[in-house]
Length: 171
Image 1 (cartoon, rainbow, N blue to C red):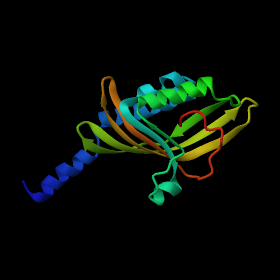
Image 2: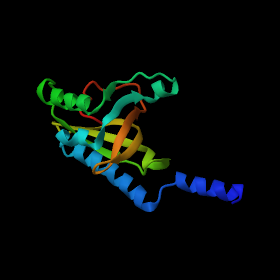
Image 3: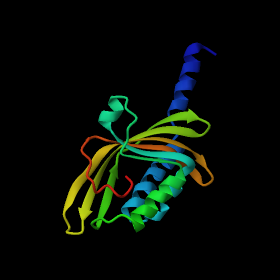
């Protein structure tokens, strides 16, 4: 096999098949619909047991700083965050609505994928006022799990370094 043919085969595996892309897009859509519909108890089920969930800013990423606004290492920490949200946190009633762009997907091997997608999150307060709450991108690593793909890593990279103190729900 020529080097060009080998490179073409190698490059072809960097691009997922339509079935794989659909499975990934479905996971991303189920994730945001679960949050938008207030089914917060189901949030951690999207993640592998040892997954990480981080919210940070583009400024921190560009500066190579690992600092984040939120960091959950493992589903146990994610479940604790939801428990605190429901029991200990006091905040005004509101809801989110996510709009997610078409994901860019790279095949990593072993059934895993690197996925990047843009998002906008609108927040509607109990008064009816709706504002843009956050914009940015999701930088994800997905891996196979017992019921299909799961997040091994979800890094939420916010465009702005100004973060509303009412960020109680996961993004």
